[in-house]
Image 1 (cartoon, one colour):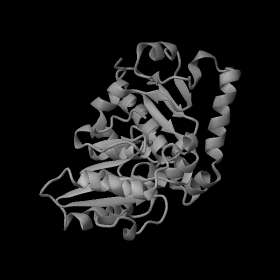
Image 2 (tube, helix red, strand yellow; image 1 turned 120 degrees about the vertical axis):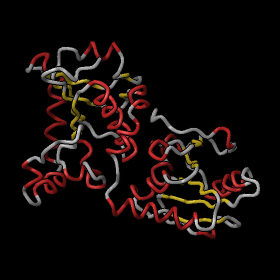
Image 3 (cartoon, helix red, strand yellow; image 1 turned 45 degrees about the vertical axis):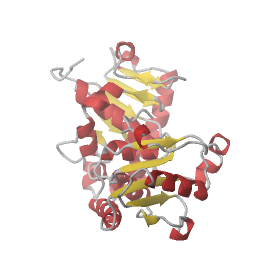
Length: 308
């Protein structure tokens, strides 16, 4: 599948926003992995909402991979890129253009819109590659596109691309370091209420007291070692909610909390692409929680492969 010798590698454009930060990171990561594997290029206009939080995308209005050798003129004009991102005009042009091309493919086989299917689409597989064989520009309109083999092989390149800007990297690092000064183990805890009150009928909306019980259960599995917990929540929390436990809190921003969790020794939380990314980025064993009846066993923690 190696196309590095080709004169005009395929260009994939991710044209539809899908969910929040975790979802968009994971979708982007799978296409970055494919790019590393096959020599194709990626543009992700749908990442604009979070682009300013990461070193590479903050400087590139197109959010390109591989990283462009030169800045575009849109980035060079002071304030212009920020205005484009704020108005979302470029995103809307690409989104509606992709949808229109799916129904009226006036540009022929060279420009193809690929819409999501009910099941996961393996973009590294022969079926998908055959489908896009004649296209030079592939517009991706959906969420469940995956290249798990490529992600496993190119994980370090993905991590390098998604380094947070120094401000957030420092806040994440300091949140974990404060706990490490008095602990042998730092475990991350992701408490997500907010949208999870209603998502799937509240299936993953666990009360804080249940998290505290899980934390005690996990701490008991490190005999002779002091365990501290880094708690990251989408709502204000305080130490009094976790009696008898050594607790600290994340920086309080989505990317700050995300990368603080990545810096822990292990982590747990409700099933979420947010914790999947933290686990993947930090090589941090994760235990996704599906039910309030779940038990935490250290042997069941695994590093995420961004299955999504």
